[in-house]
Length: 122
Image 1 (spheres, helix red, strand yellow):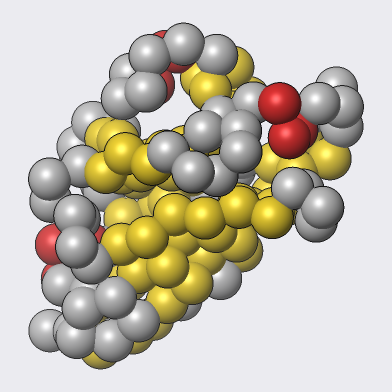
Image 2: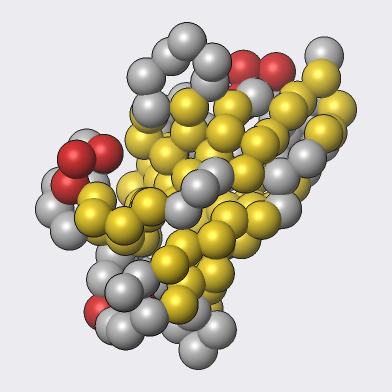
């Protein structure tokens, strides 16, 4: 089985930074692409960023491009999301997931963490 656990969320002022971590347990972590999604109350879960198995190909939602950066350390079975220049609109629960299909579609990820709350104050 695969388990994903997010951490690093919290309260930050607008313009600040946070780094989220997603620690994975189980087999074949390094052979899968990984993604970050977020969901605010009353809204659909949306794609944030993804990274391929080797860490050299990344993809970002337009809303976070240039501010957020995804990376991974396969030796630690961990994927990261560095979030800079945070805005109140970034407030959401952030989830990491293992990708099994198309990059930006939640249904194409087969394992999900429980999420970590990020709150950005104005």
